[in-house]
Image (cartoon, rainbow, N blue to C red; front, side, top):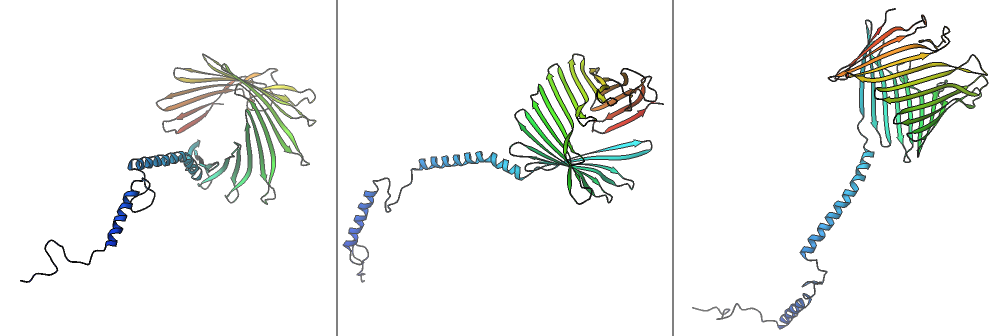
Length: 404
C-alpha cells in the first residue's frame, strides 16, 4: 500500500505556507473591537451613532403615536366643520294637499316647500299648485328665499316672487332684498322692493324702501319703522311711519303703537293708534286689542273713531280649550262705513271657539255672530266652521253659512 503524501499523522491537509502578516492584522482588529466596544456611542466594526435601548425605543414610539393621535383629535372638529361647509345637507321637502269642495265642485291645492342648506346659508323654494281649466296641476305661484350669513353676523335675504306668464312660464315679478344687522341690543333692518321695468327690458326699479330700528331688551323694547316711496319728481320721502313700544312682565304684556301718514298738507300726522294688553289669571288668559283711526271728515282738528275693541278670553275646562271673543266698533261689520244709527260703539261680532283633542285627533268648532250692514239693529248667527284633524295630520274643514 502506498500512503498519500499529502497527509501526515496529527496534521490537516497540506496548504500554502502560513502568513504572519495576516495574523498580525487579525490580532490588531480584535484589539480595536474590544477598545471601541467599551464606548456606548460606537459599535464594533463601524463608527456610527448607536440606537437607544429597546425599552427607550418602545417608550419613544408610544409618545409619538400619542402625539399623532392628539393632533388628529384636535384637527377633527375643524375638518368636520370644513366638510360641513363643503358638503351642504340634503334638501328638506314638505308637501301639503288640500281638497276644497264648493257644492259639487272639488279642486285641489298643493303647497310645497323645499329647503336646502348652502355653504353660507340656505335656499327655500315655496310653490302653490292648483288645477287649471284643462286639468293639469300647474304652478300658480313660486317664491324663492335666499338667506346668507356674513362673517360679522349680518344676515342678507332676497325674496324672488314668480308668477306664470301667458305662455305658462314662471317669470319674476317682484324682488325684495333685506339686510339685518345686530349690535348689542339694537337691530337694524333695511328692506328694498324692486319691480320690473314696464318696458320689459329686464331692468329692475326700486319702488319702496323700509328702515326699521329696534332697541331694548326682552322686558322693554321700542321700534321705529319708516317707509319711503318716490314721488312724481323721483324724490324719495317718508309716506308711512310707525312707532311701537312694548313692556313685558310675569303678569302679562302691553304694547302701544302710533302710525302716521301724510295729511292734506303733506305732513305726517297720526292716523292709527293701537293698544294691546295681555293678562294672565287662574281662570285663563285675557287679550284685549283696541284700534282707532283718524276721521278724514276734518283736516285741521282730526277726530278718531273706534275701528275695533276685541276682548278674548282663553280658558280650559273638561279637556276642552274654549276661546270667547267680543268685538265692539263704530264701523258696521262687513264694511268700512260708519254706523250712523248709533253715536257710540256697538257689538259687531261674537265668536265662540271650542277645541277638543283626543286619541291623536282634534276637532275645532267656531260659531260666529255678526251685525250686518243690511240690518244693524242686532247681532245674529252668521256662519259656523268645523275643522277636523286626524292622526295622520289630514285636515277636513266644513263651512256652514247660517240661513238668511
